[in-house]
Image (cartoon, rainbow, N blue to C red):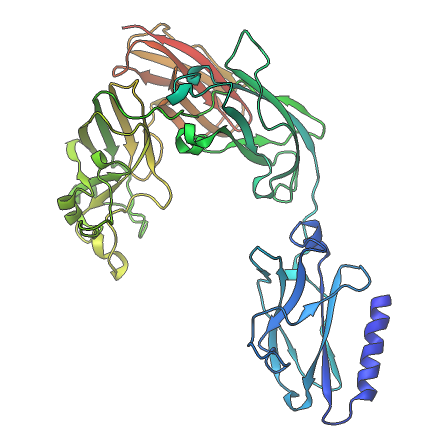
Amino acid sequence: MKKLLILALIILVSAFSFPQGGNINVTFQVDMSVQIIEGNFVIGTCSAVVRGDFQMDAGDTLGNWQGNLFQLTDVDGDSIYTGIFSFAQNFSGTTYSFAYVIVNPGLSDIWEGQSRHFTLSPPSVVNPIVLFNDDWGTIITEVTNTLNFTADISSILGVGINNAFDPFQDSLLVMGLDWDNLGKNVVGNRRMENNDPFNPGIYTTTLTVTNGSAAPNGIGDSTKWKFLALPENRFTNSGWEYGADRWHIYQPDGANISLPVIVPRIIPYVGLLDHTVDLTINVDMTGAHNIYNGEPIPINSIENVIITGSAQFLGMYSFLPPVPPPCYCIDDTTQGYIKVLTHSNGNIWTFNTTIQVGEPCGVIEYQFGVTYPGYDTINGVNASILNELDYPDKHDLILLNSATSIIRNNNFGDLFGPYNVEKIENSIPVNYTLEQNYPNPFNPVTKIRYGIPEQTNVRLTVYNLLGEEIEILFTGEQRAGVYEATFDANNLSSGIYFYTLQTDKYKFTRKMMLLK
């Protein structure tokens, strides 16, 4: 009511104070209450301004649609920011466009997603109060969950340069939970601790988290997180876990959840390769599509399937002189930017090479491409030979000194697969299960059975003792049922391996033994 009285007084004064040829006052007013709640507008730090094509006519010598000259204020603390600015009478009848803007020093400005309009007319113009960006906000049902994390890093204790992971100088942290406004108010020590002298590789911590504005429903919504090892220069990938983010699905308010023991996908830096490694990379072209037009690739018309990656033995793009810059075409083979695969059988193309001593260990990224008639003129323009994956997606393999040979199977356009998993029962299990593989010990093929009581995302992965990802047996969405995966370890050496089942809600890990 106080705000309305002030505006009425302004209009009344304007009507009687400005004779013909005087100024016309224009009032701008925007409600920032929702932006304050959502954290986009911090009182005392942010400011609200109006910008538009009226600015020069209102006296801004620097131009339209810029700057902070037309700043709005909230004099009575009701979250409605107001400004009154004068225009010369001779602009009467002109229609202007404008938008409200949030200015946060050191960060990018936040603009409304649409333009607003007013027509200058005497004695004054009062633009209606509007919510910034017409955002009415979202009703958020907040829940707070307590998460108990347990990580098993036994396989990477002392395996890297200078004994990384070294409990006396390295740290393992739980990062995220509050990324992208999916969560907030993370309380607890992100740095995990080993409190069991009999199990030096077991690290634990407890964190509480409340769902954020991007997870407004609370129960059933989710937030993402990952492990991070520090200092970053002692680990590959700057200490971050490889692969997809991990997710927590919010449970009822006050829930205390103990997550299953997790083997982090963290690799210590291990230096240079000290022996040669035989590498085979296969790609299945079944169902392949070109990313530039989404159309199927005519397999019977394929001329070449190529590979390029982050290591020279896979082909690696370089822009350093005197090497000519790449053309992103089949001619790049002459400079070693790309390698050509061999058509082995059916829809499978294969690349074989020997990785030489001295190659940096760690994660190697790569992608495929394909040539066929017209591939380079899709949509009437030149199209790159790198027509498999959108940036920044890449396939990857982990190169460590423990490997003597690596076989990597891929689907063109798919970061995972192909898979050898089948549904063996139509009944719906009561609980999530991951059974012991059979036979165990095995040589070289074994079966892994698991059950899911509801439709969920599933990822079934095999790791070695160092935590290296050996093979993804399945990743994707599956309906409720009992499934069985086949794991062929023909190219692996005898030893202990782990297999992990990860779903939207649970994660399980079991151990198996390969004896040859």
